Length: 299
Image (cartoon, rainbow, N blue to C red; front, side, top):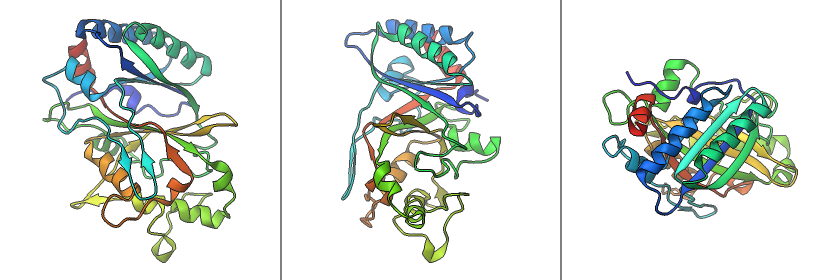
């Protein structure tokens, strides 16, 4: 059985940081391997959890024989009422830990290890807001699997497939218009999300709008629930703030099915109501290889 990167499943940390990079022109595979080995080495002694994921093209260079089925670049989405840009990048490093100083030290060490081979495109610290809520005040990740076996089944490529033990990853930075959202009465906010605000109970029957966030994301395709393991986190300042959406899944198609539903691209023309209050300004797909595949690729 392949071993997933432990940072995918480690929970409880309140300080987070994500770094996204694009490879510089002319960087060789050998140079990339050295840089990524240095990243892993510098994090070994630090009290932080980490996940290293590669964009489709970068992982194809590192491990051409270990390509999981369906791995492809993020493509822009244009729906009737909203758009999602594609900013496909090559290296994702997600760090999370118990203290801001430790996570900061880890982020600067990673950046030093990668600066010769890649351009830093996103440098985003984040945090846990209250009791794991989005900045809108609603609990985030309510639909996540609850027990460890379910988390692994949802997030990891199954044994026997190329890339087993690894995870497909979706990242998007979403900017919230909290002034507009908070101007709504709480009952209307709950209809936008599809859950109650204090305790995250899903609305039922006629109380659940067809364009709520829950309705557009709680999907089944051919009888299979399009579940993913969400590890998103809030970020921002008084002037600019939102949610860094980060999720892991056993197949990339789950992400595309949910995004198509949110952006009104499934034939019914219905757009997720939440898109009126939150806009995506980045979008990338990644693969977070198993420990064994990552070690083999870098050695």
